[in-house]
Length: 113
Length: 113
Image 1: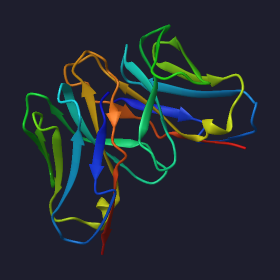
Image 2: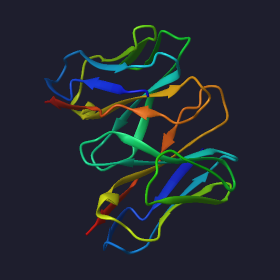
Image 3: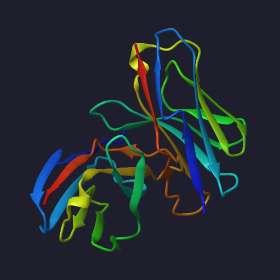
Image 4: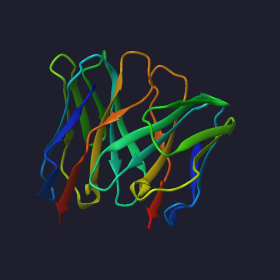
Protein backbone atom coordinates (compact mmCIF):
# COMPACT_ATOMS: atom_id res chain seq x y z
CA UNK A 1 0.00 0.00 0.00
CA UNK A 2 1.39 3.38 -1.03
CA UNK A 3 2.20 5.77 1.79
CA UNK A 4 3.16 9.40 1.29
CA UNK A 5 4.98 11.35 3.98
CA UNK A 6 5.69 15.06 4.05
CA UNK A 7 8.35 16.67 6.19
CA UNK A 8 8.23 19.05 7.94
CA UNK A 9 4.60 19.17 9.04
CA UNK A 10 4.90 22.90 9.64
CA UNK A 11 7.43 25.54 8.69
CA UNK A 12 7.77 29.23 9.52
CA UNK A 13 10.29 31.37 7.65
CA UNK A 14 10.98 35.07 7.19
CA UNK A 15 10.08 36.66 3.90
CA UNK A 16 12.70 36.31 1.17
CA UNK A 17 14.09 32.95 2.22
CA UNK A 18 14.47 30.07 -0.18
CA UNK A 19 12.92 26.90 1.18
CA UNK A 20 12.49 23.22 0.43
CA UNK A 21 9.52 21.03 1.19
CA UNK A 22 10.00 17.28 1.18
CA UNK A 23 7.77 14.44 0.08
CA UNK A 24 8.57 10.74 0.21
CA UNK A 25 6.60 7.75 -1.01
CA UNK A 26 7.02 4.06 -0.30
CA UNK A 27 6.15 2.53 -3.68
CA UNK A 28 8.31 3.86 -6.51
CA UNK A 29 5.99 2.46 -9.19
CA UNK A 30 4.19 5.73 -9.74
CA UNK A 31 2.60 7.26 -12.82
CA UNK A 32 3.08 10.86 -11.74
CA UNK A 33 3.45 13.11 -8.73
CA UNK A 34 1.56 16.33 -8.17
CA UNK A 35 2.11 19.24 -5.80
CA UNK A 36 -0.90 21.22 -4.58
CA UNK A 37 -1.47 24.31 -2.52
CA UNK A 38 -4.40 24.58 -0.12
CA UNK A 39 -5.42 27.82 1.56
CA UNK A 40 -7.37 27.52 4.83
CA UNK A 41 -10.91 26.28 4.26
CA UNK A 42 -10.41 26.17 0.49
CA UNK A 43 -9.99 23.60 -2.21
CA UNK A 44 -6.69 22.53 -3.72
CA UNK A 45 -4.82 24.39 -6.43
CA UNK A 46 -2.54 22.35 -8.62
CA UNK A 47 0.99 23.76 -8.71
CA UNK A 48 3.14 21.29 -10.59
CA UNK A 49 2.80 17.82 -12.02
CA UNK A 50 5.82 15.62 -12.73
CA UNK A 51 5.51 12.55 -14.88
CA UNK A 52 7.40 9.47 -13.72
CA UNK A 53 9.82 9.89 -16.62
CA UNK A 54 10.66 13.48 -15.69
CA UNK A 55 13.18 14.77 -13.19
CA UNK A 56 11.78 18.22 -12.51
CA UNK A 57 9.19 20.84 -13.39
CA UNK A 58 9.36 24.59 -12.93
CA UNK A 59 6.72 27.27 -12.68
CA UNK A 60 7.79 30.77 -11.73
CA UNK A 61 9.44 30.66 -8.30
CA UNK A 62 8.52 27.01 -7.84
CA UNK A 63 10.64 24.05 -8.81
CA UNK A 64 9.67 20.46 -8.13
CA UNK A 65 12.07 17.56 -8.50
CA UNK A 66 11.41 13.86 -8.59
CA UNK A 67 13.74 10.97 -7.77
CA UNK A 68 11.48 8.03 -8.42
CA UNK A 69 14.01 5.34 -7.55
CA UNK A 70 14.52 6.71 -4.06
CA UNK A 71 10.85 7.63 -3.61
CA UNK A 72 11.40 11.33 -3.07
CA UNK A 73 10.23 14.67 -4.36
CA UNK A 74 11.08 18.17 -3.28
CA UNK A 75 9.29 21.45 -3.82
CA UNK A 76 11.67 24.40 -3.89
CA UNK A 77 10.21 27.86 -3.34
CA UNK A 78 12.54 30.74 -4.17
CA UNK A 79 12.36 34.15 -2.51
CA UNK A 80 9.36 33.28 -0.37
CA UNK A 81 6.57 35.84 0.08
CA UNK A 82 3.79 36.15 2.69
CA UNK A 83 1.34 35.19 -0.06
CA UNK A 84 3.02 31.79 -0.22
CA UNK A 85 1.61 30.96 3.21
CA UNK A 86 -0.59 27.90 2.80
CA UNK A 87 -0.53 24.15 3.21
CA UNK A 88 1.38 22.32 0.50
CA UNK A 89 0.33 18.79 -0.38
CA UNK A 90 2.03 16.23 -2.54
CA UNK A 91 0.16 13.34 -4.10
CA UNK A 92 1.22 10.35 -6.18
CA UNK A 93 -0.74 8.45 -8.75
CA UNK A 94 0.07 4.73 -8.92
CA UNK A 95 1.52 3.30 -12.08
CA UNK A 96 -0.98 0.47 -12.30
CA UNK A 97 -3.61 2.37 -14.24
CA UNK A 98 -5.74 3.46 -11.30
CA UNK A 99 -6.44 7.16 -11.24
CA UNK A 100 -6.68 7.56 -7.48
CA UNK A 101 -4.15 9.88 -5.88
CA UNK A 102 -2.53 9.10 -2.56
CA UNK A 103 -1.90 12.29 -0.60
CA UNK A 104 0.56 13.24 2.06
CA UNK A 105 -0.73 15.08 5.11
CA UNK A 106 0.87 18.32 3.97
CA UNK A 107 3.35 20.94 5.12
CA UNK A 108 1.83 24.07 6.62
CA UNK A 109 3.98 27.03 5.57
CA UNK A 110 3.94 30.43 7.21
CA UNK A 111 6.03 33.19 5.63
CA UNK A 112 6.55 36.07 8.03
CA UNK A 113 6.62 39.59 6.54
CA UNK B 1 -12.18 27.46 -19.48
CA UNK B 2 -13.15 24.69 -17.14
CA UNK B 3 -14.70 25.33 -13.74
CA UNK B 4 -15.86 23.07 -10.99
CA UNK B 5 -18.62 23.89 -8.53
CA UNK B 6 -19.59 22.35 -5.24
CA UNK B 7 -22.55 23.05 -3.03
CA UNK B 8 -23.38 23.64 -0.41
CA UNK B 9 -20.22 25.32 0.86
CA UNK B 10 -21.04 24.50 4.47
CA UNK B 11 -23.50 22.08 6.01
CA UNK B 12 -24.45 21.23 9.59
CA UNK B 13 -26.53 18.09 9.93
CA UNK B 14 -27.74 15.96 12.84
CA UNK B 15 -26.65 12.35 13.21
CA UNK B 16 -28.97 10.03 11.32
CA UNK B 17 -30.06 12.60 8.76
CA UNK B 18 -29.56 12.12 5.00
CA UNK B 19 -26.90 13.85 2.94
CA UNK B 20 -26.57 15.02 -0.62
CA UNK B 21 -23.54 16.96 -1.84
CA UNK B 22 -23.35 18.03 -5.44
CA UNK B 23 -20.44 18.66 -7.76
CA UNK B 24 -20.66 19.91 -11.33
CA UNK B 25 -18.00 20.59 -13.91
CA UNK B 26 -18.27 23.07 -16.77
CA UNK B 27 -16.22 23.47 -19.90
CA UNK B 28 -15.21 19.88 -20.48
CA UNK B 29 -16.84 16.62 -21.46
CA UNK B 30 -16.45 13.06 -20.20
CA UNK B 31 -14.22 14.01 -17.28
CA UNK B 32 -13.00 11.61 -14.65
CA UNK B 33 -14.64 12.70 -11.38
CA UNK B 34 -13.51 12.14 -7.81
CA UNK B 35 -14.78 12.60 -4.27
CA UNK B 36 -12.18 13.07 -1.52
CA UNK B 37 -12.60 13.62 2.19
CA UNK B 38 -10.17 15.59 4.30
CA UNK B 39 -10.59 15.00 8.02
CA UNK B 40 -9.15 17.50 10.49
CA UNK B 41 -5.36 17.21 10.66
CA UNK B 42 -5.25 14.41 8.12
CA UNK B 43 -4.51 14.04 4.45
CA UNK B 44 -7.04 13.61 1.71
CA UNK B 45 -8.66 10.23 1.29
CA UNK B 46 -10.23 9.20 -1.99
CA UNK B 47 -13.79 8.00 -1.48
CA UNK B 48 -15.13 7.44 -4.99
CA UNK B 49 -14.17 8.02 -8.59
CA UNK B 50 -16.09 7.79 -11.83
CA UNK B 51 -14.91 7.44 -15.41
CA UNK B 52 -18.36 7.85 -16.96
CA UNK B 53 -22.09 8.17 -16.40
CA UNK B 54 -23.31 5.51 -14.00
CA UNK B 55 -19.79 4.17 -13.43
CA UNK B 56 -18.71 4.46 -9.80
CA UNK B 57 -15.71 2.92 -8.08
CA UNK B 58 -15.54 2.89 -4.31
CA UNK B 59 -12.16 3.13 -2.67
CA UNK B 60 -13.06 2.50 0.96
CA UNK B 61 -16.02 0.85 2.66
CA UNK B 62 -18.13 3.45 4.36
CA UNK B 63 -21.45 4.99 5.09
CA UNK B 64 -21.49 7.02 1.89
CA UNK B 65 -22.46 6.40 -1.73
CA UNK B 66 -21.91 8.26 -4.97
CA UNK B 67 -23.83 8.63 -8.20
CA UNK B 68 -23.17 10.20 -11.58
CA UNK B 69 -26.52 10.86 -13.22
CA UNK B 70 -25.07 13.14 -15.89
CA UNK B 71 -21.70 13.47 -17.59
CA UNK B 72 -20.58 16.45 -15.55
CA UNK B 73 -22.48 15.87 -12.32
CA UNK B 74 -21.23 13.87 -9.35
CA UNK B 75 -23.28 13.43 -6.19
CA UNK B 76 -22.20 12.19 -2.79
CA UNK B 77 -24.96 10.81 -0.59
CA UNK B 78 -25.75 9.14 2.67
CA UNK B 79 -28.99 7.75 4.04
CA UNK B 80 -27.96 8.21 7.67
CA UNK B 81 -25.03 10.39 8.69
CA UNK B 82 -22.58 9.37 11.39
CA UNK B 83 -20.48 11.65 13.56
CA UNK B 84 -17.41 10.29 11.80
CA UNK B 85 -18.71 11.63 8.47
CA UNK B 86 -17.72 15.15 9.52
CA UNK B 87 -14.99 16.60 7.35
CA UNK B 88 -14.12 18.64 4.32
CA UNK B 89 -15.36 17.05 1.10
CA UNK B 90 -13.60 17.87 -2.11
CA UNK B 91 -14.66 17.06 -5.62
CA UNK B 92 -12.07 16.89 -8.39
CA UNK B 93 -11.92 16.23 -12.10
CA UNK B 94 -9.35 15.22 -14.67
CA UNK B 95 -9.36 14.61 -18.40
CA UNK B 96 -8.32 11.54 -20.31
CA UNK B 97 -4.87 12.79 -21.16
CA UNK B 98 -1.50 11.35 -20.35
CA UNK B 99 -0.77 13.88 -17.65
CA UNK B 100 -4.17 13.77 -15.93
CA UNK B 101 -3.68 16.68 -13.61
CA UNK B 102 -6.51 16.70 -11.09
CA UNK B 103 -8.36 19.96 -10.51
CA UNK B 104 -10.24 20.49 -7.30
CA UNK B 105 -13.42 22.28 -6.38
CA UNK B 106 -13.83 24.70 -3.47
CA UNK B 107 -15.05 21.98 -1.10
CA UNK B 108 -17.97 21.44 1.26
CA UNK B 109 -17.43 21.57 4.99
CA UNK B 110 -19.74 19.07 6.72
CA UNK B 111 -20.28 19.04 10.45
CA UNK B 112 -22.39 16.22 11.86
CA UNK B 113 -23.70 16.87 15.36
